[in-house]
Image 1 (spheres, rainbow, N blue to C red):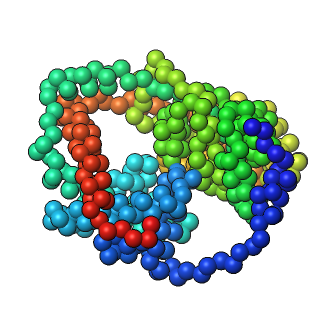
Image 2 (cartoon, rainbow, N blue to C red):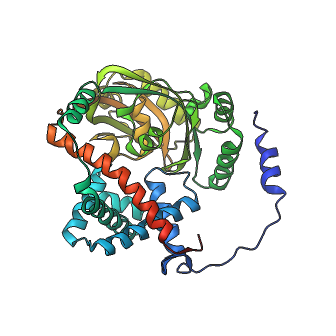
Image 3 (spheres, helix red, strand yellow):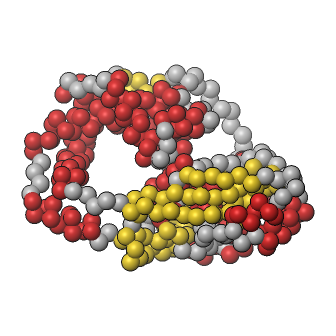
Length: 403
């Protein structure tokens, strides 16, 4: 299906709608009850913001409510099993959760606070998960078995686990003023009208703010290990030919189309460390600044060349070393598509154009898991299936109102 012109689409979709008065709801108005325990408007808004920061940019209000209902059911199961969480266990759980994105608790809570998510929201999310994990262990731990043959088969699969590469297309829609509302409307149009790669390419050419719009949003092959974790999580559940939900990145909405995925002969790395240089050029939107960035790219062949090229200039070279998960998603995504000593001039920070240059990318290979680790993984997988059935039973037996 071809996309209709933006102005026409917006007029048809939004212009014909008569404005309706907003229904004022207090932040602490109950939106649902689970066995008499309220889920408030505030909790619902917080959960949506929280999940968006974890990469669930297209999360609907209904999905957020279902997740909060599950949390209430986890707590109910905890009371049935007489399971609780100590303060030390909670702190450890928060640290482990942050480390999945290669962040500290302080870094994650600061990032969440920046978009209005309270630390209490993060804490209670982790608390519910820890209680549920202990419920599952207590209830099903003795009912799940793993044989030595099971471990042998799993180790054989793990030993040949290859590194994957993905072929993506992207659409980047700015959310800074004055484009935020228009970008959200365009995202809605894309979700409703894009059904295949050709539709996506047309939408990227018309609407995307990324330089890739000139190629219909198409990117070259990218190693999955190079991608920021919050975007990898979105792509992990996709098949080739599918479009992602919206992903919130700094100052933009990102939408991806997975064109292809392939295995490589290389083993999958356990960690990636990026060494990169950054130069900020003032008046980033001005044509002369874009021209200056192009000249800079032509003069340098490595990160070390930047120091000589900018000697005496007001711009300063900043060197950074970090994992993809420690970087803002937009920076991590730009670096993911670069090879060593390549540069990007796609991002703007405030009024400055950001020139990024990848100095090196270091991949650390994982130690092969031992038999005890594999046994634990298999036990968790099998207990997880039993846990899903138990959660469905809890939901069926609960009194849930106002979903």
